[in-house]
Image 1 (tube, helix red, strand yellow):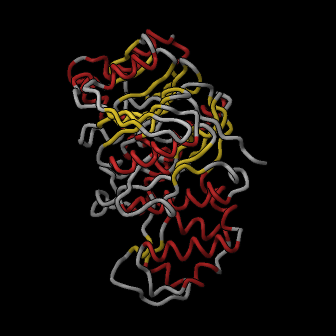
Image 2 (cartoon, rainbow, N blue to C red; image 1 turned 180 degrees about the vertical axis):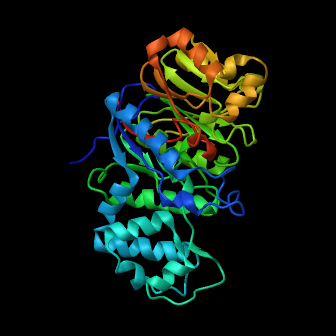
Image 3 (cartoon, rainbow, N blue to C red; image 1 turned 30 degrees about the vertical axis):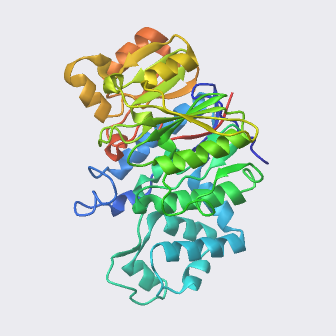
Length: 397
């Protein structure tokens, strides 16, 4: 069955979504490597899975069909030619030239999927019958960030962006997602607006957390550490030529750990409600606008306006929810714990982390008590991502 992709906003009813249940890859984190894998702390896997399972339960109760990354990867690895190509690309990516590819190709799809997610260490290579490959412990590194599926791809209208991650430790995530998008039967024949193999030269970097679909005609893409100007320019051109989108906004994201992606500084949760990190209100950086349609010349404009003014032009009047209630130390604390990174499951109904008390109080005042669904987050937050980060919406509306 082919899934008819459709994402034209951030808040229409969520019909289908991709997630990844964290697994053994988390237990590869140690005090000595945790920073290398972009974590600040080591989650307790049992509790992390419990919290993620509860999150998925809420998604299903809200009517969303939930697809798991691992299940789709297993399906794709059953296609023999694709399986071989993924193995060769993986070994090349991690410079494992001394590993015999057949050792991995001969694994069944389930075992290979687990290896591609959990990684391959020296002891496991020996169990497979291979010899010592090099001085590294992880020959193929684990993917502990994979439960943040927002970053590894994005759907806009009826097509996909196969993202290209900025950090090498996450490159394989988007590479695997690319093969799922292109070869899995539920995605086959959907348009591809950016292909991280065919289009992704060394200068390109774009991550899904920086992509926000404002409405059917407008998309915002954050420019910061994880997504660069050259890639936004290229993706904007593809969207303007191949979708009903006729405005793409390039928005500067503050270059701090507390603001990893555009969706960590603002989210749209209804047609007239946005959640905003207050520091963004002070941002005076220029917003670049790309316009054009039907093969006409693309116009690159640089109005000296802030992003909130852009939102007012796109959304009309709207209510602003300030992270942490906009007051005192709560702002910084709840920004750090992704209070801004809310996920709308239908207009005005959001999933948030329970720890963001001040933000949630304001949300309840505006949306109503029942429309703010809190989920436990003591372990989920250790990867520095929120409810929006943990989902890749496939169908809304």
